[in-house]
Length: 286
Image 1: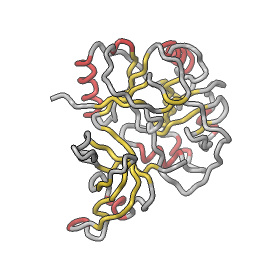
Image 2: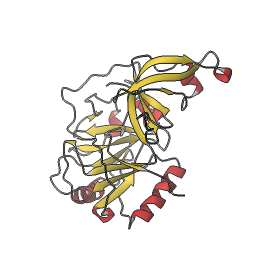
Image 3: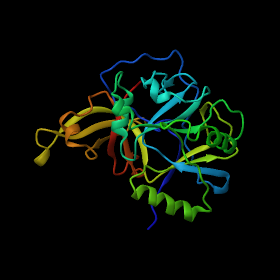
Image 4: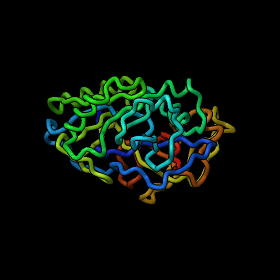
């Protein structure tokens, strides 16, 4: 049976949520001018119009030609040796380690003084050139031509084509089975558009959204003395529980009341509440 998936527009990272940390880094005066998320309501009819890449579970990064920033404008304290060799023009990408390692890369990126060993595990995966005023397929080719092999810590994210919906379904299943989050589809002819774009879509086998924690439910049985479930309220005003998806450490130290969390779900019930909702991660403001 093929995986049921939903088409959503790029959640600019998260793609990307970033985990909290004790350090407080300086915030840039302006947020980077990057593409943001929008929602697509209908399937793509012409797959040949798109280039496809894997959706990485890392931390969005923006290189302005001199300094690396988060999507909120927070300066990322990357060592000088890490960015040595990076070009003098803007790059949009993802700080990434490997599939399933979001927590690790997020923790490193938010530190003011992470160790060299920690940074050596990260790669800046470039997926766009914001200042180029040409179609995405040309921007991608320029990135491949100019950025390949210039730094061991910079890599151009591979973009490729698939024939049809059946091949797309099959490829998505493989990525998910191997621990990936999903696929990204980027319209070949699209210009880089600051703000919300209808030209980048995300394929995942589930939806994700955000909700505010309004209460904690105490666990029972093996979770006695720990968190049993979060009571949350989403942006539509629906109140429901998140009782799965937590590690034991998260149950011992649950997201605080008032915090924003990301949850995944598989459609909605007739009452409009998320179906089979489970916790993904804390979504911190930054």
